Structures are given as structure tokens and as C-alpha cells.
Image (tube, rainbow, N blue to C red; front, side, top):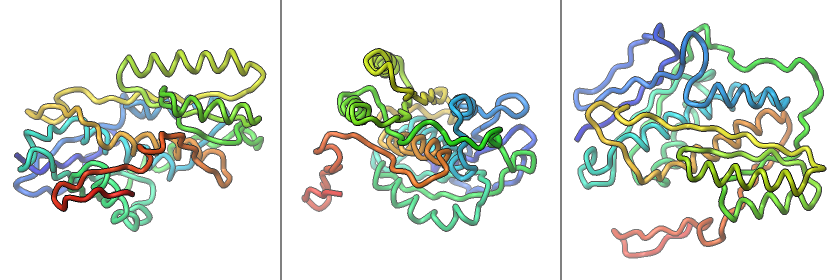
Length: 276
């Protein structure tokens, strides 16, 4: 097993040196397709939001870029191959962002959050984006506020469907947020969204749907991982990313089964059930 380092790169000319330890396997995570188009669904998300009159903040975009690193590591590093106990991986991320000092101040909270979600040991560091990517988000051409008054996660399951129906029945105009990584989930999301548009045809609510999946073999000679314990971080990040474009205080709505929302975890080492 190796400790794993994922280093984000904004294009082939982003060659800043990132030192690594002898026992770290380094994977370069290329974030740009072509000259300046953001890859892995990130550029598509920006384009979709622009079409809806939403322009997220650079910090909001940073969060989505960070979540892409987390999702890549979580799904493309095998637990059984790359851990001493067949579960706990050691993962370091180096993420290019717009404001490294601001993000570094939050690194302790981030590592605790990711450790709790996945059971792994994370180290997260930040660096400046390359100069030509200092500013990525397009400025709005109009000062008119977005048409949406709330943002709600929409997974394609019953819980998020009920949440969306409740919002629409109460007269809200939500922007629904979906992540797709495999066809079955994506099909369910599309069918349910279509039914909502039919039933609430008088509402201008809409959806941001982001397809983000990383190729097998991203980490050389390492198998993929199917447990996806960190997927909720990506889902929440998508919601915050979009919500930052509302340019006002916002509540990110997460409709969830009550027991699951408690995040019940069986701590075998202590023999107790922890609720958080």
C-alpha cells in the first residue's frame, strides 16, 4: 500500500513543483480540457448556471473544485489495496484555489469532516490557481436577481422528491441540485424532474444537474473503490456552489430520511453507537 497524493492541475502548463514523500504515490488530477474549459462537469455546471442567470462566487467554485478532488480520491483509490486495515486510506490533496490563505484556515475543519464521512486520514493543502485562471466565473450582464428563492438537493430518491413537492406546494421557486455518476440514478432523476415540471407547470423552478465521474485507472496500478462514503460532500458542495450565485443569505435544503440524517455509525472499537 501507498499513501496517495492527488495534485490538481489547471492545464498542461501548470507545472508548479509539489514535493512528495518517498512513500506517496502521486496522481496529477487535470482539471482543464483543451485550453481553458474546466473538465469533470465543472465547466458544464458553470455554463448551465449562467443560462439560469446564476453566477457563483469564486469561493463557491473553489469548493466544487475541492469536492472534485475528494470524489476522485474516494472513488478511484481501492480501500483493500491501499490501506493497512482494508479500510483506512491515507490521502493528501493539493488543491489550486482563488484564495489559498482563506482555505488553509479551514483545513482543520475540512480534514475532520472528511475523516468522519469516509473513515480515512486526509491532509488537505491549497495553492494559488495559475495566473490565467485567477478569475474564472463570468460577471453577470444584468443586475436582475436570479429567479430562484431557495436551493434544494434532488437525488432522485423519495426523500428529496417529497422535499421538492413541499417547496413547490408552498409557492417557492427552488433550484434543484442533482449529481449523476451512473445511469440508473440519472434516469430516476430525469423521470421525476419531468413529472414535477408537468404537475407544477406554472412554476419557473429548474434544476442544475452535474455529471461527475472519473475514469478507472486514474491512479496508476490501483483499482477503483465502490463504497463512495464521501459522495455526500460532493452533493453538498454542488448545492453551496450554486447557492453562492444567489448573492444573498441562503438555506441549502436537504430533505432526508430521519434515521439516515442522524448518521448512525457503529463504532466497533468502542462498542457504542454514536449519533452525530
